[in-house]
Image 1 (cartoon, rainbow, N blue to C red):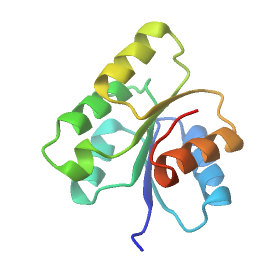
Image 2: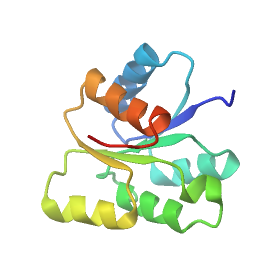
Image 3: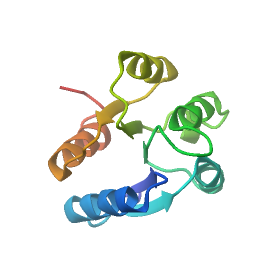
Image 4: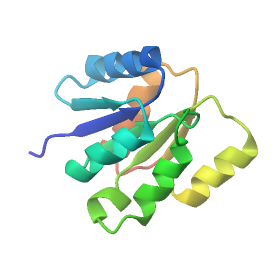
Length: 132
């Protein structure tokens, strides 16, 4: 069975740690990597694809929506089709519409709970991405 690899992209250390802890608690066999910037995330994704990307929108270098845009336009199927969950405090309609147009798999508004994160990951990776 192929190893499930998750990339968590967030500039805030506390948020990255919380998401890593949450994912490990529910899915201890998953391989988890973290990036504090979009530039670092791109390097990691070019090296080896991930099964799922969890990404914040608001970051100081390049925003999460730009990472999503880059992934969806990438020639590699492993990158352009990888599930992407935007995990953000942005709950304005414009941001949500833009994320959907860019091809986001799901959109989660912070604060994030372990139960919600677990449900989203389970739905995307094990139930074919069907949302409630």
